[in-house]
Image (cartoon, rainbow, N blue to C red; front, side):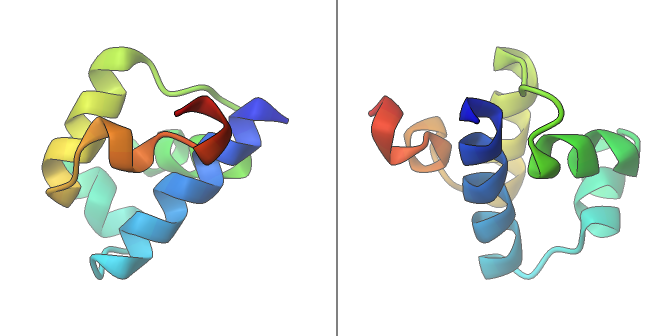
Length: 70
C-alpha cells in the first residue's frame, strides 16, 4: 500500500511536467519498466533513484513524498 502512494505521487508529477514513462526513463537513462513498477506500487524507489526522479522533474523529494509520510 505504501509503495502505491509513492507511485501515485510520482505519476502525478510526471504527468504534470509533461513526461511519458518512456521520456522520463530515457531522460534518466533507466529502463521504462523501472518507472512502471514504481508507479504501479510494485517497487519502492531507492533514495538515489528518488533524488534522480526529483531532479529530472525539477521538484523536491518532499514534493514526491506521499502526504502520509511528510
